[in-house]
Image (cartoon, rainbow, N blue to C red; front, top):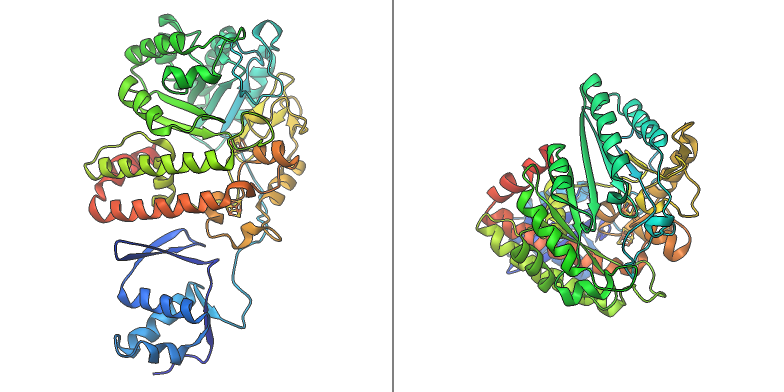
Length: 481
Ligand code: SF4
Ligand code: SF4
């Protein structure tokens, strides 16, 4: 039996092998599928990688003392079909093509209910942020038109999502109450479920407000950065005082009263703050937040709050240690609530294949005070012109062009990147802030992201081999929800 006469090469843009504990996992990049390589699979790939290129017959010959030739030939065919092995002379198969996104019906609208915030956190990124007294509040007219647009756009969906954002959204509770009533009425008329959520600094929460949110099943995340010494570094009042004491008092009250949904904590990691394990312990074990998610500030290295490369590395190493703890607990069937890790597990479990980095513009738009439709909450108040207005509708020509360009990997490092279908180029807003171009790729931490995915593959492989029930219990229901 002969192999077709080709010189085989390994295509790292389509296949990536992660080895640990004597095991080898092949990550098939185009499909985000994971395969455990047996001894033959690992040997074939080893030899091709070592030789850089090798004739198929010579490869079978090379392995003939350990494996039957027919098995080697069959495996070469399979790996060639996957385009993990390729003919040396053929152009490397990648998928840089632009995706033409014809339709992007909204499922989620973010309402920027007030640009004002009652705190003065040192790292706040919002261009349009003001103190509450100077905050610009959204009118009910704009908010109602936003809800109308959402329902029109989501005609075929069973559920729509409304996210209240600011500034601090609780500084405009009258509007939130009006919107909830209006949207629930529209939802009842059109047999659609309406999901509400918000992220709050918690300082304005009262028992009455908590009960109100509970009655309407709001998804709530609290912005809190960890133990007092860490939190008070940046999360301060306008007058510069730490807010830990008030935030934790309110957060405890919230966690004690809230029944309808799990409450999460959202942590901003800025320069000087890399202690992710201590933060996790404090918020998860100390407070009982259901999950703790971390947002490293990586967008602006030239301003004081951006994490340095060294700090980013420290954060990443802390993530890996927390990830090991996540694995140890998951093997016992328990989710530690490390949400960055859980998201990666979900992406790998579902075989996520992204053409675009996030839902901004596809299914989600954020409305500013004037009714402008922005890519997401971070763009409200920015200089990037909105993509239409709630009065006139979505500027679908411009939005389609934006999304098409974002999906086009031609000429970028993303075209051949092994995590291109998980990262898809990174956050538009980070690139907007850092490079002045939302389509620029977030090249400043690609290596760490790739390392993070490799780490995730290792954790996923161990978990799926030793306790696959974890995915059924903790990931599949989440997707169904
Ligand atoms: S931004 Fe970097 S890590 Fe992300 S897909 Fe592009 S090259 Fe890969
Ligand atoms: S552009 Fe960035 S901030 Fe906005 S939704 Fe996407 S990932 Fe999030």
